[in-house]
Structure formats: structure tokens, C-alpha cells
Image 1 (tube, rainbow, N blue to C red):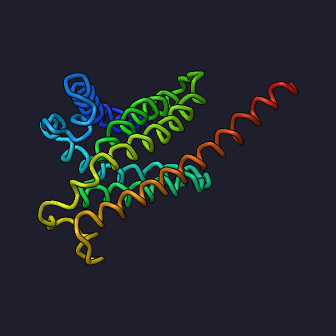
Image 2: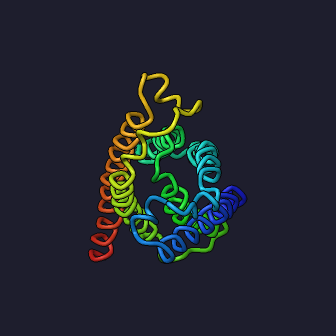
Length: 220
């Protein structure tokens, strides 16, 4: 369990920090619209597409979280099942359709998972930190900022999806008989719906887990 959590924390850090660095550099050096369009290829040079594909593949391994849960005889929460299943499909469809907001997943989610899995690794060896509550807060903030970022990137880049040949790996477009622009619209709508659902579920979890805990502590 410790090795599992440390491996995911280390991998998340390896993926997210170079992308975050490239994104910050892009926005510092270039005007907002040019940075959002990646007009100067800063994100391309950081191999964001490659890291996004590896991040997508890593989500299959993250299902081990549920396996570990099950092996310990604990029920697998709906939130965990929904999160792990949905993120696999969401990242796949974003990779296939070359969604311009693809970098947000490995950057934002990778950062959160660097902290979260490091916390889990420490807990597994008996080290307890008092900030578990704030990991959930960071996760909620991630969904809000990611949603805003995806929305901005979509409207800035939506015209560019109409150009260029249909890629062989865009299975979404091929199966549904769509062009690049239409398949990206599907990708965007699905991502908004999925992230919105996660936001609601995590807020509900936070309120039930920590508000009830605070009430019980006051009664004591």
C-alpha cells in the first residue's frame, strides 16, 4: 500500500510540475489570447499531449485504490467508483479529440494527487497529518478552476477545431460520423457534465464527512 501510494505521488509530480512550469512560462511571456491558443508552441515543446496520454493510462492503475479498499473488506464508496470510472472515459475522449484543455488534467489533477497520495502513504505507516480536510478542499477548488479554465479555452479555441484533417485516433468522430469540431464539442460537453457532477459529489462528501465531525466534536 505504501509503495502504491508513493509511486502514484511521485508519478503525479513528474507529470504535473513540468506542465505547470510550461503553462506559467507561456502566460508570463505571451499575451493572454496567444497563451490560451499556445500560438508559440510552448505547451507542445513541453510534450503535453504525450504526458496527457500517460496520465490517461495511469488512471487504469489508480483503480487499484478500489481493489485495496475491497481487499480490506471495506465497501467501495460510490464517489470513488464514479470518479475512477468517469475519469478514464473523460481523459480518453479528450485525448482522442485533441481537446485544447487537455493540459488541465495532468496539471491540476496531477498536483492534487501528488499531495493526496503522499498523505495516504504517510497514513499507511502511521504518520497522521491534520490537514486531510484540506485535501478535499483542494479537490473542490480543482474542479471549480478546471471548469472555468476549460470553458475559457473552449471559447477561445473553438474555431480552430474546424480546420485540419481528421486524425486516425479520433475514434469518437469516426464512430459518430463527425468532423473534428463536432467531436470536440461532444468532448467539451461531456467534460463539463462530468466535472460538474464531481463537484456536487465532493461538496456533498465534504459536508457529510467534516460538518458532522465538527458537530460531534462540539457535543463532546
